[in-house]
Image 1: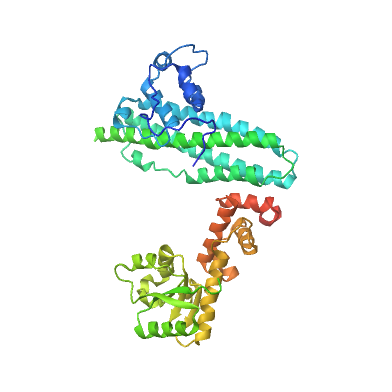
Image 2: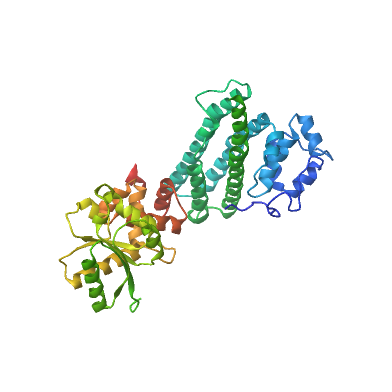
Length: 244
Length: 200
């Protein structure tokens, strides 16, 4: 459905030629898939890493390298489904930390920047148009933040309670079958409105930069959802089974 | 389009009625019977999907009383054809309104043909129209959607079935690329189809 904002060779599975491994240099990993830049920042791996391997860099930062690689694979292989072995070696705490810092990154950086850019882009437009587009964007932003708030306040604390073996009896992770569709549709609409129906007064370069950001955001949110549905949920599920 | 014969699927329990309709179509030449289902027993869904009918003529009494209100829904789940109700008993107005047209056992052959044509035309108007420009009717419906009206309210205002409204809405989304109501409102405003004042 989405297009990789930065072109990368498509690989259906790991066996398809590239392997992401712990003994790989961090620099080579990025060369392989530049879309991993955001992941690196969120995990807190600082630039200036020289010739460090993935494993070395992760250990230094106190992150389980298998978890980091698992996240990288979701970003790299279309439709990647982790094996149960891969899920067993990953660290649930690191997954939650990653999801949490992604939320912060979306709200504090990506959407803030978009807000500023959209505001500047709309400057030459008629007041009425400015108002409706701005209102649509704000509603989207609010909805997304509402969605994250639920995960931060309900889902993540629950995962923590399962990790601490004091699982909440009234809640299971399968209940967290969330409906992402509406937020996804709104983002698609925003993209189409800006691409197809914007008043002629807007500056093309500004529009194009915003669209690029929206494509990136769309791709990133899609991967974010995969990490939740295909990694977080099955990992917690397994722990719940153990508790029974 | 002129010389092409339209295929009709009959879902009527009475063989007399089925044969009667068949002979009317034989005389007129515009329509032909592509299949007859006497009831909705096992396999009728598959049958419905496989017969490529342009129009379905159905006697709503084939649905049990409880299912009747939902009958039209079931049809559109299984077929894209226009659906015309044949009134043989006392049907509620709501039941009949769901269909594209209605005729009775006592209608003249020409009336029946005219109604079938009307049902097909209504269907085509809301069906897959080529080109990416919104039609006049689609624009009217878009304005209603943008103002927050429900499908039922829109159907009542234009005196069309709720299914036709849904088809129009699908086409609007396909043509504009916009899926949410909030997004369609922005579209309508940017294209000056409504005023900010209209919904504030």
